[in-house]
Amino acid sequence: MTEKKKTLRHSFVAVEGNIGAGKTTLVKKLAADYRSRIILEEFTDNPFLPKFYQNPERYAFPVELFFMTERFKQLQAELVQAQLFTDSVIADYFFIKTLLFAKKNLQEEEYRLFKQLFQVLNQHAKKPDLILYIHRPVPQLIANIKKRGRDMESTMDPVYLETIQEAYFDFFKTGEEWSIVVLDAGELDFEANADHYDFVTDLINREHAPGVQYIRPD
Image (tube, rainbow, N blue to C red; front, side, top):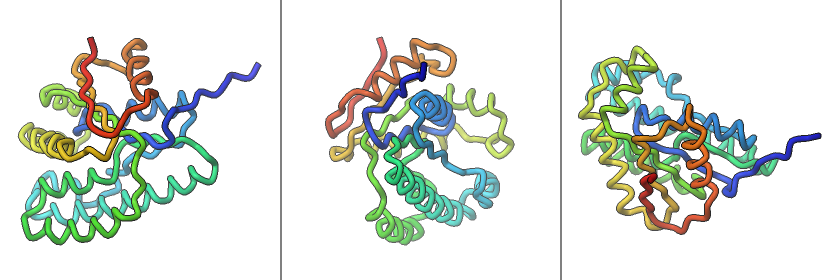
């Protein structure tokens, strides 16, 4: 007997979070369960990223410019394919992430130029039906980063992670037109705990009005 295919309520879901929050782990699990098209950020292809971690001021602009163009190309290509085959799509980032990181990493003049380029591309970027933001405290992020053992992240500064977290929460204050769910995941292990994972999938498959919702599991 053929197993019935599970389907997502939303056609395009973006899972976001700080570095080390577990967004890619969750996206892979969701995509497998719902047989959705998956979009994973290809950050390791950025030739400037290792240099950026060593010298942020010098390499911030090229690293952000590379990320922006590659994210845009990847999202456009994958979402067009999804439309052709009417697949649901789950991504581990959304395009506005580009601007949030750039605002924290670039000097004022660089950011002004970058924002102009971003706005041209953003006019053509598809908006997710739902953004799920996985929030974890910075010490937990650091522990997760150390656990996965990527060399270029070995010197990750907790202060940098705090500034990225602030960038997301600043965006949430102006996110009235988006459907955003901010999940306090500090006590959740959706990789190893089936109940935790079921909680997240139930959350994703609800209808969410535009605006920001802050969810803390009981």
